Length: 126
Image (cartoon, rainbow, N blue to C red):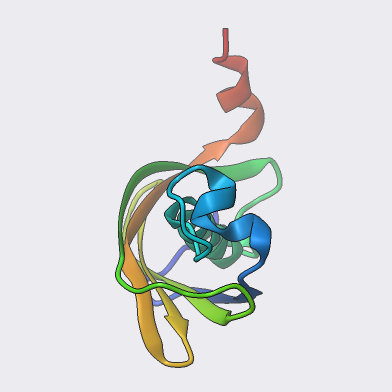
């Protein structure tokens, strides 16, 4: 495993589309950003942060999520999603994540991932 250090960051800029709404995702009835999509974007940012530091054959898997969805975002709004490594303990990597809409905090929390060898991990499936 490559060296993963505290403070390593990555960010994504995304736009809320009709398919990203709570109504479309089945997590509510309103045409605003759905929490499942917010979470997916936060996880994507954590993966992006690790992308350039993992060795060939390595990947990471999510093991714990704690995210608060704090404010609505309408279809067409642009969000900035950032993940930053907060803590590293061997293969375990804990991130802080935040999503903002024009500077307003839309969601934040922590996501924990564990670095694994992809083939070995998949061989454990039944």
